[in-house]
Amino acid sequence: MFIAASLICVSGTASRAADRSAPPSVYDKLVSQYMAGKWDDLDTQIKATAKSPGTFSISEKTDIDYITQALSECNPAWWKPCAGGKRTQMRVSIFNVPVTAVFDPQQKQGLNAQFNGDERTFLLGCAPGELGSNQQAEHGFTKGELAAGGLWSALGMASGYVQVPLSSLLDNGEAEKIKLQRVLNFRGDLAAAYYGSPRTRQWWLFLALQYYRPQYQKTPIVMSRKSLGAMFVAELASHPDAYPSIRLPAIQDADHAEDKLVSAVHNWIERRGWTLAEDKRIREAIKAFALANTSALHTGGPVKLANGLLISFEP
Figure 1: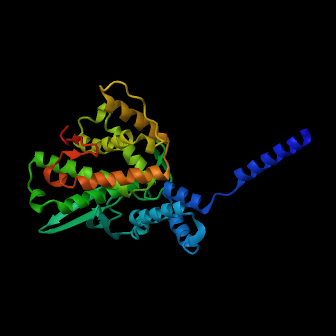
Figure 2: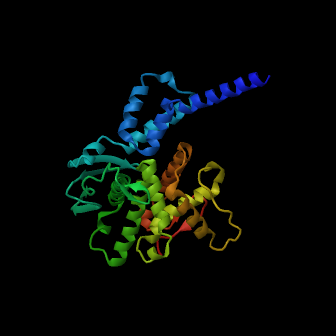
Figure 3: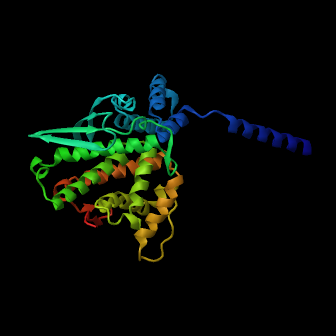
């Protein structure tokens, strides 16, 4: 009996060892590539799996369909020449708003918006070699992840410029310029968080939560940036069971509850990621938030969270 039990034990151990050394499935590879923002590898893998439609279970096929759709939105054809530093025309829809812009390698960063009569021209770019770079930047994120967020943010701001009447863009006083800056920043933040890779999304949400810190409170855009962080934390707090990867603290006292939650989430996501299911839900919440608050471009705010709370862009 002892010998038989020993053989069973050894056999079980060997089986577990074999399981541990088994290569990841095609599905696991696709999810891993998506979550890491490896768009070129992901595109190649998806095209290869299209020849074997029976590879996945029903639930896996649903995930792959979502990843394929997200890839088409987040990795348009013009992305690769931009990463190669080539002057490139960009056509994209940002939350259903068509935008035409030019990636200009001489435009080191940000957005250059020019107005001539009814014509609006947008030039944008980033520091040479940063788009697609795996070099470390800050807080564990790469220069490529940060640069991608900056590019999508510029496109988001361009989509705001497209919708604002030309008369409000010219010869405005300082107060109106600041008001416009806030709503454009809001649109830019939403675009970066939605259209970026999961890693870029994580960085941009981390950045939004960073603006709760005291040193940023006199920044003109502090509230428009904090609104994205508030949306994220409200989503987590409203549906904690949907986000097992993100640990929320137990809040006993209502005083400063928002600040306590923000601090905890900010610290948690700096070094930890989340699952595909969680990322999908976060991304969909960002889109819903954007579409629910398109009027902010004309009103200057406030914006409404899914839980009904309002956030003013005025500090």
